[in-house]
Amino acid sequence: MNQYAVNHLSEIDTLNKKNGNNYSEGFFIYKNSFNKHYLLKLHQCFFWVKVKAILEVGFFVANSKSDFKNAIGQLKKLAFLMGCNEILFQVSTNSKMYEFLQEIANPKESWLVGYLPFEDSIDMNQLEFTYADLDTF
Image: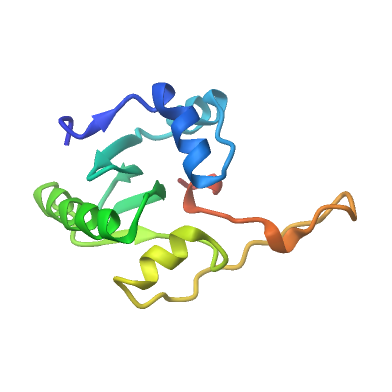
């Protein structure tokens, strides 16, 4: 897996530009203080993962569906080599990631995310959540 791992801090600008999120250096440092995470680059796609009994994907960035399909094939092989028999993604249904995942799997409903808007000017329907946004990742 180390041959595919890249330094997440050197890729922050690339990740934020490509996926529309705004993950800061502090975000990655905070998350890594609880669990070890890896940023993998496979077929021009990035996957931020945590390895446990299953391979958990916090978020991913892909340029095209064909790159994504190739990267998923490689990610499956890596998961198998690490003894993981499942890969977990949790994304919002209004996200680009959801569109890519629908091409390769049948989505299942997961837990609901609750929020309380402090300001009426924020359109909460525009928010996109990923597994990385949860404290359990």
